[in-house]
Length: 106
Image (cartoon, rainbow, N blue to C red; front, side, top):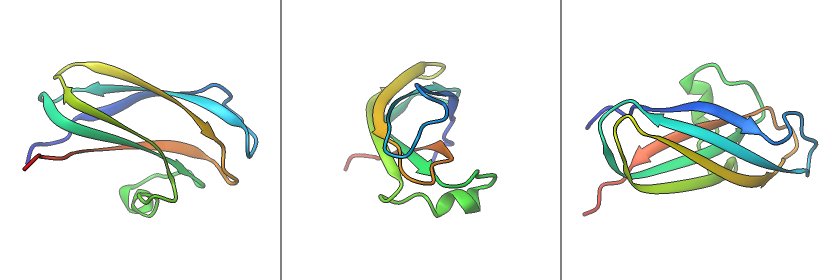
């Protein structure tokens, strides 16, 4: 298994201090500092607390907190992709994190 080298370089919100129920646009710049990868899913989750470690992050890796997912058949080495989407802010929103995984076909 190769090491995932995707980095969310930048996360921008159309309104950095949104109110519950407000629709905002989210822009995320993702950079691949590793090898070219195939069949990459990138998931975006909202969180109700500021997350400092992967143990905290694990509890939000579920459909309740997922706000968007994006699929790339190929994500080239040293390439950058920008993903943007709209989301209606949930109560308790504190931030967003990005999680990526590759799905091998077959």
